[in-house]
Length: 343
Image (tube, rainbow, N blue to C red; front, side, top):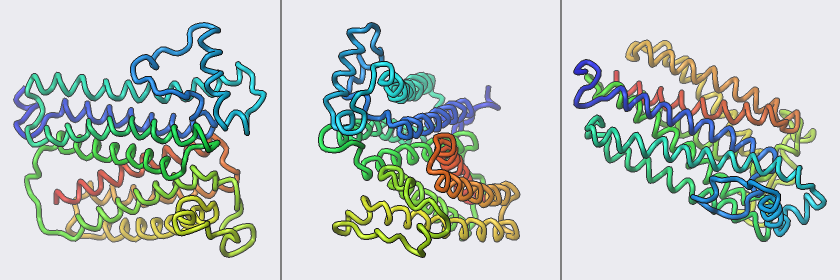
């Protein structure tokens, strides 16, 4: 037992956190599927406890369907939908919410067990409490996002979708970083190096691109300008400006797609250059070099998936693959940023 646990590390805690991170990735994938199938507004009430039980008889199904019929999405887009069709979108959203509840249990219960058994490194206790708060906040923000589509809109507000997804990816990054800390313990040697800052800037750029992608998704901007590298044969989208600055940044389909493309080019260039520089560096460990190369290669895969998804008008399979790869890229970028700080 003494070789498995040290005062500053616990590999059991690390394995638990990696498992919770995997659940977050599953949440991201199911959440993306829920959005792509237009299912996110099918459950019109927030019942954190009672909502875990789905409708069990015809009367309960009809009550849920009646709630959906009262919102603009049904009235303007899905009028005439059958009960069986409604069940199809309901199950996506119910599964997404169920995973959220399971995620909370999967974090909270082992946290209490590990804390009681004094297996959590003391330096990580406060950080784990912060991660729990972030996870709880994610549930509240999820309902806040859904509520934006229940009265005056047929879909959720794009900026709320971006905040919801951004919190999920922030939670994922925090889990991976903390799991690595729990696995390895304190760094036994740290030297001044520019690579710590460089890797964090790369991670920030990955995160920014994910937020911009959420705005593209929230505005259904992947359904227009489906040629590449041009925009319907033009160098720039013809409909760029919104009603004001915020309307342009968050609600203009042309603008959000242009911004997502431009940052994709920047991220690809930066990741490839940094990967090449890291590979030639005399100061980085072999693991850091491999992680840097992995980030560069995965960015290329993600960019290719993005182009394919756009040109195919966002089929669900490619859309899910694009979102899953974004989650894996953030994990790899987090691991790289963590590793280079431990020369």
